[in-house]
Length: 82
Image (tube, rainbow, N blue to C red; front, top):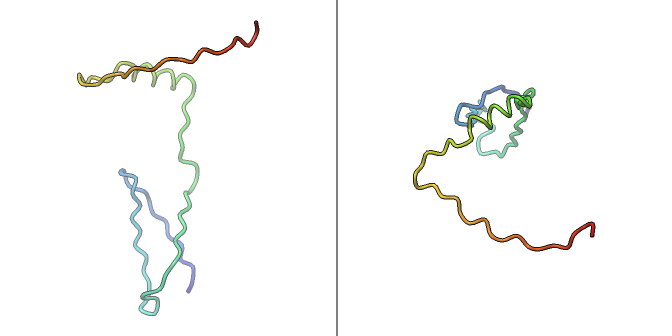
């Protein structure tokens, strides 16, 4: 069997649909599929962009049934520097 290289794009739902043409002689055979992302797609935020994001998201939960549950008690530890 030969190596086939295809390029495809992940859709907006994060799903990759791949249609690979094979011949009759390859029917009922197992194959190995390797997914390799092309290029760097992770977008990093600058510190200013991160602050803006946090500012926009703070207090944005408008669900009246949302509750912050009890956070529990902290354990008492010995002082590091007496």
